[in-house]
Image (cartoon, rainbow, N blue to C red; front, side):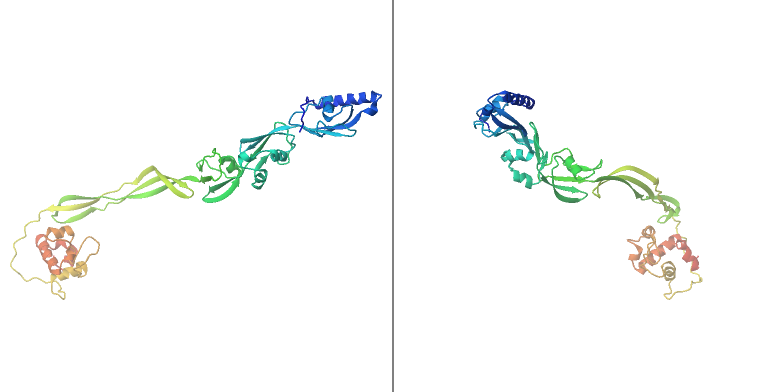
Length: 391
């Protein structure tokens, strides 16, 4: 480094002065007392003759300004000798940034990015030159690129992140500064409804977890059965304790339309957007008898009457049960009628029965059958009483 501060001279002016010195030297009669020297300024070489005693004097004669940070070789106080080579390397001011932060400013005669980084103090960033290269940092300009006064060398350190996309997670090192740049580097497209965490404009730091959730929306239609109701209506066209289905009715149908939100293939939310009844339910109508049956006629004197074909038990009630239920006094066929005589529960209760008919003995069922027959006749078993010749 120079110990002198000499006035700085532009290269065109240096060339002019050097030419004048050469002409002047040729005109001098005592030319044998001058020295022939080579002066190189930032790599551009010139040969001149001078009567200067030292390197500093020669540069002063040439009006070459030398700043404190410039490098002069040999030392400015070196005596001139014929054939001496003088080199002036101009200092360059170059800033070094790490991940966007200024960590050092170099004011030295450096010529390349490599020279800048070799000279830079990177301790404030807990780095050295070997760390930068070994850890795959991104350096701009390139390592071997030349530098000029006022240049900036940017160093972007790689960061480790966990990236989850389409349900899969992978670890990677990246130089991306933001989530958006990471997605661009990894060629990952993001849909309008997709959710990115952190947000795409957020910076990336070491150890971050970046998650892309694929969000889709769909519509589905579900059919819902609208159960029919049962309506019971009193009627005096039927004896008290008896019923008849006047209309079976039918179930209704409704279509519900939902908007479904699906994240990475799993449903996370649904919203009802439409409801349409395509068939109204129709009630089942059951008529309930309210008519009081007439009192039984006086029992006539017994008279011989043709008896029905006698079963093995010899009872007309067993014949009737055989016709109605196959003789099964515990019958529960699922048709709403029970026991050997196929009582409806309402009718059973109207003749004093409790519970359900098939839960009682044959004798109890026959007892209640006799009460019903005395009150309303054999017509309560219309088909079987006709087959047995009871009416």
